[in-house]
Every structure is written in structure tokens, then in C-alpha cells.
Length: 392
Ligand code: PMP
Ligand code: GLN
Image (cartoon, rainbow, N blue to C red; front, top):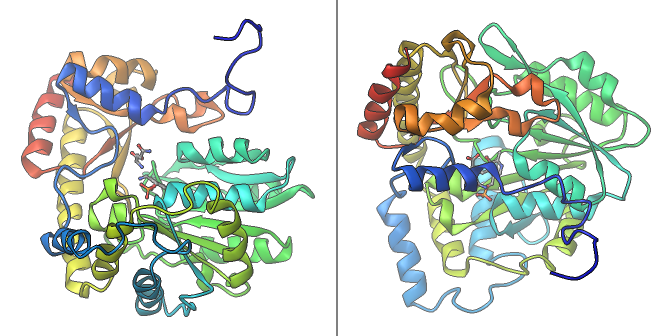
């Protein structure tokens, strides 16, 4: 400690304590409860991808600093993935940047593109690092609240339009959306794109759950809409798609000037990361469509298992169209404070969940909502469901 009375943590970060994910995972370890809080799979991704990492490590590929923008094999694979799935053509040399997970991509994009005082519009509830990174960049966050409507959290396009001011620099979009599971429709994306063009806004779009869409929902990258290719920074991550969240391989695809700008910030954050894993992810991205289909089918079955169990236990369930999270309303259980509920849940039922209120500026709007992750083994989900029945 210094002797000055000035707080050590600066004002920009003072409102952000320990992330809820760390807090709740620690609670799970301490109590032995089933951790349906932090979103990470409890089984590793494909064996051949793991083996590819081992091979890279043994062959000495990536054990020293990889190139700043990412290894060419991975940049080429990312470009091929965007082309194969979405028909988006990107030059691997000038329009692709590998990052230390999507987390660094978000941080670098905001640090690069914002001037102090710029307003950033983000959907509330928002992924926790958005608020912190906007703050670190000196920006001002302007939340537009997604509200429950017919069993899902929906965007009010009028509210979004009304939130744009002369100070708005950037829209920070997330689809499929964590924590609500909402997947923006073509109509919504069209309206967002029109607004961005009309008001000349930059767009950063976090699409890390692009492969996790269910039923008749469809993931359409915002960059594919008219006028968006030149103003959009698209963010992806191997953590979610290949179930290796610890490898921290993420990426940005965008027009050359945007990639250059994001790289300017990124080079002073980690500079580079995840050397051998970059080679493995290059192989993973080239897996056949059958891998992605099987991954989605597996997660869909898990969604249905947990959704049914939560409904049986008395929660109101917002069935997600994407991601691996289910948001619930705890009011049918006679509860209204998600924080208190989640802190007590390990004792009451041996399960850990996340209070969505932490993802809101308007905390009261998020108070009764609680998020459960279903990226866990079937037996673990069955056990969690059986424990949660005691709440009913
Ligand atoms: N964006 C969203 C919406 C997320 O849920 C996460 C976390 N899983 C991230 C970004 C961070 O991804 P990564 O682990 O690749 O840094
Ligand atoms: N994205 C994960 C989640 O929403 C957590 C990642 C993290 O712990 N930062 O649960």
C-alpha cells in the first residue's frame, strides 16, 4: 500500500471487481457444487485437433514468438472458413488478425477505435468484458436493453435508433448473444446495418458462438449486409467452436484499415500468443461440415435436457436459439434477487449459476434472471437437474 489516500485501482476500472466467472467458479470449487456458471466445456474438443497441437509443439512450430498477425496457416484457414460458410472473401495477409482469444480482440478493437468520450452502444445484458474495455478505452457505454417478449429476449429497434447521438462512434454487437441466447434475425441485422450506414458508425461484432445456433435460427454475419464490409470488425474464437477455451485463440476479420488499426493496439497487449495452438486451430477450421453439425446436434440435445429440467424445477425458461447458455427467470420460484439466489444455490441445491444482473447497467432490469451453462457432459447435466428439483 502507498501512504496516499488515493485508491490504487484507477477510476476507469474502479467499478469492476473480480469477474463474476472467477467468483462463481471459485464458489463451485469451494462447495463442490456442479458448475453451470462459467461457460467452458467439461470435455476437450476433437482428439485430432489436440494431436495437431501436440505435433506442432513437438515439431517446434510456434514455440517461439509467432508472427504478430498470426501464423500464415491459421490466417489462411480463417479466411477459408469465412469464405466457405458465409461467402465472405478476406485476404489472409491484410484482412485477418489472430488474437489471444476473442477477449483480446474485443479489447484491441475498442482501444484502437475509440477516442475518450466516444459513445459505444451495446446490448444489455452485455458480456462483462465489453463494459471494462469500453472504460479502459475512455469511452462511454450506452446500453440498449434486450427485453423478454414471447419467451425470448428481443431488441427494440426503435430504442436502438434513439440511442444513437452525434457522439456515437461504434455499435458493439453480439450474436448469438451471451447470456440470453438470442440470435439476431435477418430483419434485425438489416435494420442495424442500415442504421450504421446512415449514421456512419463503426461496428464491432462478437460472433464467437457462430456455430451454436439451434432449431430454425440462422447465424448471418453482420459483415455480409450492404455497406458493412468496410465498417465492421468481426470477432471469432476457437474456444467456443472447438471446445478448447484454455488455448485462447481468437481472431478478427475486417477491411485492411480496420485490421491495421486493431493490430496497432493488439501488438502492445500480448504482442502474440498461443503459438503451437495456432497451428492446431488452422487444422480445426478445416474440419468437414460433419464436425460442426455433430457439435451443434450434441449441444442441442444438452440444451433440451437442461431446459426441460429447469422448467420442471419451477424456473421460467428462455429457450436459447444460440450459445450454450440458458437464461431463466426465478420469480416463479418466489425469488426476485438473482445475486442472493446464486450465492445460496450451492448450499440449497449443489449447483452454481450466474446472476444476469452483473451484465446490466440497469441492475434492477436484470435482477430476476439467472444463467445456466449446458456445455457439460450429459451425466453432469442429469445430476444437476435432479438436484434442482428440490427447489420446486
Ligand atoms: N465474447 C463472448 C460473448 C463470450 O461469451 C466469450 C467467452 N467465452 C468471449 C467473448 C471470450 O472468448 P475467448 O475465450 O476466446 O477470449
Ligand atoms: N465466456 C464465458 C462465459 O460467459 C466466460 C469467460 C470468462 O471467464 N472470461 O461464461
